Image: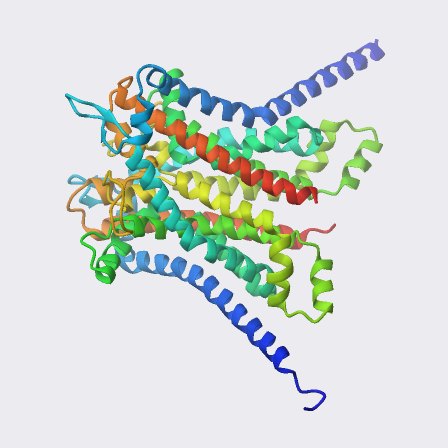
Length: 291
Length: 302
């Protein structure tokens, strides 16, 4: 046996290594495939439904014809109001956790609460929304109730990414600012926040995507199966894309498939494009960071 | 006089800053307040029934779920619990190997562009709304399962488990990858210096070292699967009974709440029993998340 010839043991190890690598690669590929398959399926069967008319007209004839405009408008309302509530609270909560709170028992409890808020089943959030906003605060089934439920549910998304953005600002920035006599809040307002604005933005965008896709929390708090007119204020009910897809695919008989597929495609495209935007912003921020 | 003015201005500034800092602190603890609010308001609607005549033996021991029966209302949640358990278990059989395998591949075997692309795809997988998954179960998996297994209906445990598996994989991959990344490079270098292949390093060194984090990854996946609502509501077939095979239709606890809450009168026993189910769900996911968090905290301490 030559000096450079590998021993049977080494060959066996090498073989095991390549087997393991290809098994893991296959597993990964099998996860990537469904994404492509789903998007592809919805495009093939729903793509033909997508038209100006489909997007901008109301459902007709018991939802078996027409478009999805009221659902789009409703989703915009729900997302907009929930964002208006969740963004300030989430950003300030992250500021508290990253800039003020030390490593104390309180911080640990807050952290645990955030983990739980993210982990509570969406249908339990829905029950909470019914018990708290619809009944206790007498907001009724309205955009406001549904949006508040969504806001609380999506709060962890904003807190997590804002916190990550804030902690990426180097300590020396803050120290320099304190040394010239600035107070804690002045430092946060004029140095920390401006330097992490893009990171915060990715969190806010992710919140939008989550809120737009959720169905269970709005089912009983503000979304309606069908409404003949568009919502006028936050006290009205509204239709929503996610809810509309659920309604079309399970509750209404004889819906032409391309309408259902078209609705699913629009919802998926909205969510994926919003997410992609967030990913692009994030990678730009990471690349451009100068410190 | 000028001095007085600037003093007052400084005092005003200080007061303003105090106010802002108070607001920040309030927002900081808001998450805690919200979690307690969720417990309070869900429990509040459940309490009258919980303390007023709910037969716990029946609730946990009977599969007779007849909340609408006129003569004899029965609230046996055993079949619903069995539904949740069966779908979640089968989902984990699918998701755990794939989730952890992908985490290992992303963290240890891929580099550069491939790694970044994979992470983005996994992120997009996580972004697909559950109602879209449910729709896929309804229109794509349903006929597929009927064809492949000769089942009378394709809306069953297998269908739901497949969807839940795919839905809970992303969180397993991202937490699992974090756990592997947290293992110090010196461990890898030491093992490689002794001539170990990458696979040996992974199997003998990284997996034992990242044990807790991987456990947390699995637990968070389980929590997600138990709590998932829309996908299982649409894809598991609405049959309240204890499944005997993966091709049986079932109904989970979450799906039951979603399916029945809209039809119940507020304040009725039927309405309250759904909040009891919600309370049970909350407790289960709370425990799962707490355990996962403790496991993660364990790694950070080391």
